[in-house]
Length: 176
Image 1 (cartoon, helix red, strand yellow):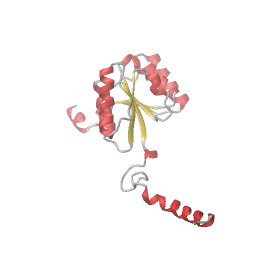
Image 2 (image 1 turned 45 degrees about the horizontal axis):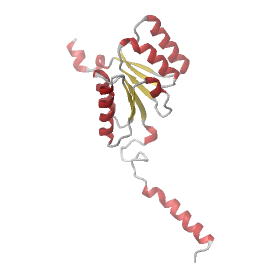
Image 3 (image 1 turned 135 degrees about the vertical axis):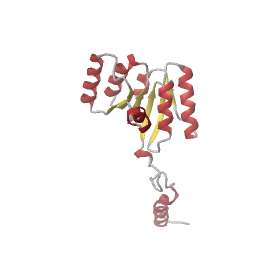
Image 4 (image 1 turned 90 degrees about the horizontal axis):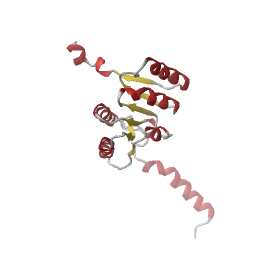
């Protein structure tokens, strides 16, 4: 029969051996990104450009898409299925209301690829929810919406990037 002292010695030995059973990818070894080092993303608007952005995010080891949102259920479900297929699970949440996505505390950043008139409303709401933001151009539909976005980004200390990546691509610059 094992006494308490022997049990504690055995238990401590097992506890210190535990890290040997943790996959190195969880610790960020061998070129893998540790889960805590990933940027978690919610995608709002997953039609044409939104899906293109989504597919790009899915190729980045330091990013993880957790949720998609679109008022068009077909776009939303197709995007959710793309995410689930890419990650080999069924964890991607799907929303019709962007406010529900913004309520999630586990999402660090959002991508907004909706019709232009929604950029201001969604951008300010995302900043208020303290999400970093990547949004398709134009920044806003009106000058006053643009100013509201700038004020919200500054007030809540988030990062905003407007999607003009094509201007940085060599083949697009060559075409000009």
